[in-house]
Each structure stands twice: as C-alpha cells, then as structure tokens.
Amino acid sequence: MAQYAVLIYANDSAHAVDATQEDIAECDEHADDLVAENAMVMAYALTPRELATSVRASGVTDGPFVDAKEIVAGFYILEAPDLDAALAIAGTNPVVREGGGVEVRPVHSGGLVERPAE
Image 1 (cartoon, one colour):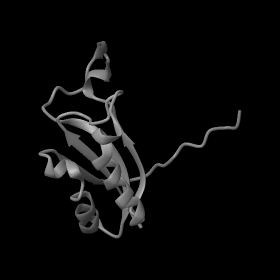
Image 2 (image 1 turned 180 degrees about the vertical axis):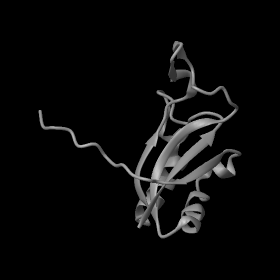
Image 3 (image 1 turned 90 degrees about the horizontal axis):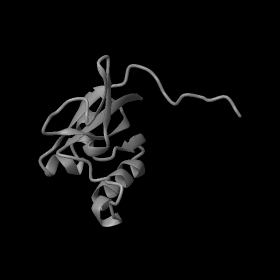
C-alpha cells in the first residue's frame, strides 16, 4: 500500500512543553482513530514555533525557518490505497476544522534508520 506524508499546518503547535492532556486530547483521539483504522504508520508532534532554531548558510537563528502565519505543527505517515483515500483520511484531522490545514504528499522512499547496536 502507498504511503503519504501528512504535514499539519496551524497557527502553532498544541504540544507546548507544559501542555496538559486536555490541551492535546483532540489530537490524541484523532491519532487513536487512525491507528484503529490501520492507516497511521508513524506520527510526530512538534513543539511551538518559539522553540525552533534555523540553520542557514549565514548562520544559526532562533525561530522557524519560514516566518509565516501557519507553521508545521506536526506530521504523520499514512498508508492508503491511493491519493483520494489519503486525502479523505487527512481531511479528518481536527486542525482542518480549527482553521488550519494539512498538506498530503506521496512518500517517495525512506523509513526508519537502523542504528548499529551499541
């Protein structure tokens, strides 16, 4: 089955260092639903933009790489039979109802990096 990356765009991440279970409950419920449907392969929530650090040829700066209204708040990988199915699944993300959005891209290649045993 094909894999699709879903990038979550919002005004900021709900996953602040001091976020409560209540703050992230809707995100967790959505993830649980996708796991129950055997659609989600992996997921990562990012911390708020204030914790970002960017590296450019000109040096290191505090803040996100791109200064924009919405930022990438997290991402996950779905397995779906085709792009239409992936778009339907991604469209259930709560951030869509909250004024943000998601970007869906087919995954070309990659996976977890195997590390040598220490």
